[in-house]
Length: 328
Ligand SMILES: Nc1nc2c(ncn2[C@@H]2O[C@H](COP(=O)(O)OP(=O)(O)OP(=O)(O)O)[C@@H](O)[C@H]2O)c(=O)[nH]1
Ligand SMILES: [Mg+2]
Image 1 (cartoon, rainbow, N blue to C red):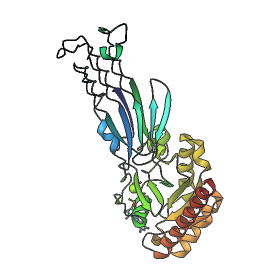
Image 2: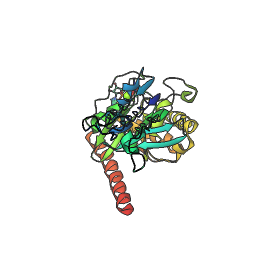
Image 3: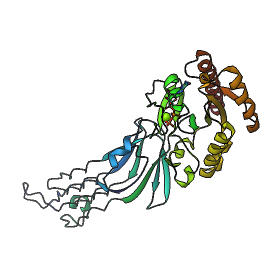
């Protein structure tokens, strides 16, 4: 199962203590106590693997190494090793201890999330003309400790929504190199799947049913993954006896999760159109006029309709490109 929402405690390293030592070799009392090392810090790093949060399963607390104490002859203690935790891009980082939120959006992006404690100064650092044999030193400082909630919201351009068994995964597989499981029963897809079509990321979300917002079926927890898509592909099966109702069921569930989902650009497809003859398809399309949106019949075994979908995707790419040009 995709882990997309977890809590974790982080403890960074304590700083090492500064040393008190004197130069014995020269028979003088010059101070030679080194500084304590820094405590290890904790970073997050963005990766493309959407399953990366599974690493945290069963782990309650992660701790970075403490800094080592300072030593004599001006040897500083070693710093504690940093920890770099890999999280999928699209991870929202809620720091529950400070109430600050941040986000990992690109692959390789590193974010310092909790800083290790400073090492203390050794007595060498306390020397002065009036204090040539200081015995002062500093203790190391404790590092930061936080509780985080890591919430994955996939970054995709297009989200596929619809009742179960309407052909969402089949179309994703047809358009991209994704290998989403396809079968002739509801709830084949249990986790969201991503596919890449040129510059676009397409997200196939598990099927929704009436009452999903009250946790029926697989619930609506996956809808977080289309929160940030610009566009929805909404699938209604030609096999449906009441396509208008099917459409409304999904719209109601989307709205119950977040009204903003209803404002996204939506393309409506009448899927598996090869199963009906032309006359029957026309009847379904006539019925669907009630929803007040253009409905496009598609079939994954019909080249023409796949080309039609690809044309839509190319238009979305063009718009995306225009927007980034404007931003620059
Ligand atoms: N004839 C025909 N069958 C299709 C078409 N697209 C999908 N199917 C079949 O419909 C069934 C369901 O397809 P899926 O792609 O698994 O549907 P889904 O919407 O992803 O289903 P869930 O993951 O359960 O929500 C499978 O048996 C597919 O082979 C199509 O265009 N024509
Ligand atoms: Mg599926």
